[in-house]
Length: 144
Length: 110
Image (cartoon, rainbow over all chains, first blue to last red):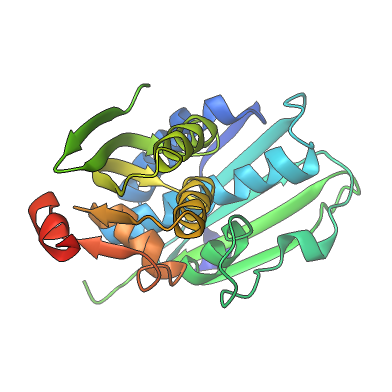
């Protein structure tokens, strides 16, 4: 089974509110384990989804908590695909670019984490023309 | 959730626990800044932290900056594996003083 024949594992819709994220991360943790990832990789996947949703809460909806987040998770033989969709206005690409690490300051690390722990992370407007989509993939270590 | 704070040999020890994310980071930030403003050295015990993300890290960075400006120290002790991974990703494992336990942190401060 290749990435092109990935099967839907789950689709989740929840409000863009910070107090929902413990529950969402629990679900992602279970999904990553179901896909066969070990504990360190599972923690990386949970971190990436947490940061992606945090970006939506803070940037796409400006912390208002009045919009939904869609999380689609697909599984294939060689990778897990996680897609985070919002329905907010276009987010400036600069706000979702990793920042330089040489300056010690609070904030701005979320996107850096996503790019470090996932194999791909592609951000853009939704194909429907409404909202933004971040699609991330994590390859499976098939040697294990 | 209230974090446990105790005093050990003149240091304030703040034991954080559970998941420190966008929801909890503001409370953690307030608590850390309150400790730093007492102008005592602060040890932050992260042994029971099961998840920390960029918002939690930001609270710790801000507290470290306050401590540095006030001439006191803020160190991390017993950092859990998940938290250490996040500090390494941010390359902050070289910015914070990290000790395996409270005794080691106290010995380093002597």
